[in-house]
Length: 126
Image 1 (cartoon, rainbow, N blue to C red):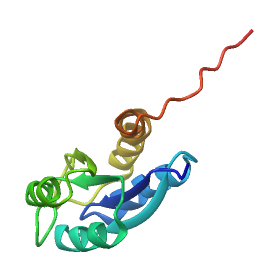
Image 2 (tube, rainbow, N blue to C red; image 1 turned 180 degrees about the vertical axis):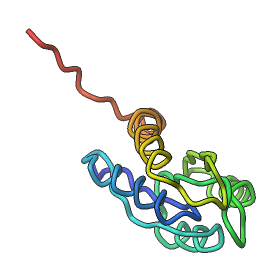
Image 3 (cartoon, rainbow, N blue to C red; image 1 turned 60 degrees about the vertical axis):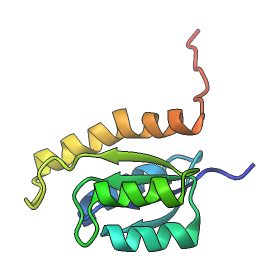
């Protein structure tokens, strides 16, 4: 069975890169596309037909909530994880980036796995 296909959409290049890198490090996923605004996200989603979209809430042209509304109407089978951008329109500093990376690894990746029904193997130490 092929791994679930994922598109990442957020206005921040840094956030897209962090999320994309985290997904690329997970063999259970296939990152098939990224988009920097809602309009491009919708075009990419229509063309790529992902199983899941990771969607930022603040994007130009078509915002996150508007993109989500179109997604749920036109692509009801696609699952969506929407996240709030911590500081919209403000450059992210190194401390903020570290916090974002930690949140992605501890919260976003497990949430995606849960939505897609992917279970991690249990590791026991003897």
